[in-house]
Amino acid sequence: MARGQCNCGAVAFDIDTDLSGVIVCHCSICRRSTGANGIAVVVVQNDAFRWTRGEDEIATWAKPRADWQTWFCRTCGSPLPGKNDESRMFVPAGLISEGCDGLRVIHHIWVDSRAAWDEIGDSGQQHREAFSSQC
Ligand SMILES: [Zn+2]
Ligand SMILES: [Zn+2]
Image (cartoon, rainbow, N blue to C red):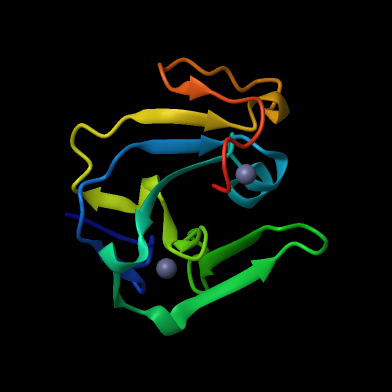
């Protein structure tokens, strides 16, 4: 069980499963989207995820000619959970305020594309590109 929300609190959600681990995508698109070294997410089954507030406050943007889309709060701009694939959602890990005790980074993807200043210092497994359809 985990719970999270955006910065302004307009959008909130519950996750009804144990979180398996954090995946960090270091690709250039995720970097621009967050302004940081990429984005850290957890991936959960659709039926374990539930919006509890503000689903109509969600805005989206899809990058032209790329299989990439972002979901964000139209008021505060926080990145929000979105569609990972047909059966799963990804949830930006930084939104989660409860239920992340013991959670660790397990995978880094698109490591070959990371920023020059981005030094990976944890024990997560590093993948040069994507290791599956995730992110
Ligand atoms: Zn917000
Ligand atoms: Zn990415």
